[in-house]
Length: 217
Image (cartoon, rainbow, N blue to C red; front, side, top):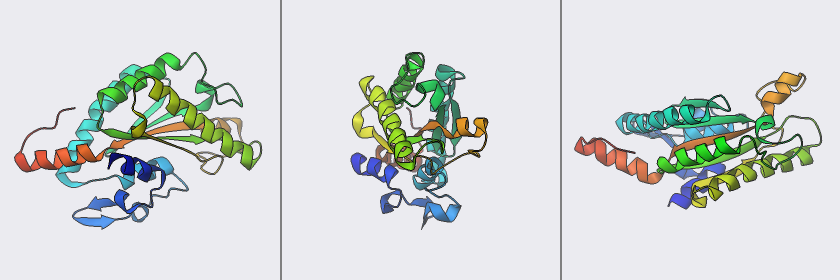
């Protein structure tokens, strides 16, 4: 089941990743989320449980967010978005220009990321690579995929189970800013790590709500 849910992160059209709001099943697109425009936020929206169970998941994610901010410092932008977390690394911090080989300098921080992901084990992880529009579509697509895979491989090498992680490259198709400026291109060259609750945590919080107990990480 966990494996199928991870696959759902890379294909958010999967019905297993429809969000639930007030007892009704609602597709993430109806909440203004588009995989083609913002795949990270789409994946989080697609995993929403909602209600009191969702509030418990938010508490779990808040604890994890605090740890991430303490461990990663200023090397990444860390956002807690409802029942999920989005961690954004600028590609220039992680890789040499035009390369997908992880640089030495950020590796201690990525090891800390791996440790937090191990400590909060009831999650699934999407690693998404993005580029600017410099170069060809084919080259940018391949680079985004390889950069996502390289980061995922590093996390796996440092203890994060492979079955918790899915990677996807989006090339130049999902810009955050204009590619006409240097600053905009820097923003668009990024790798996003998306963290959402796995099925085990969702079931645990539902049972905890029913019994009145508190979910521990």
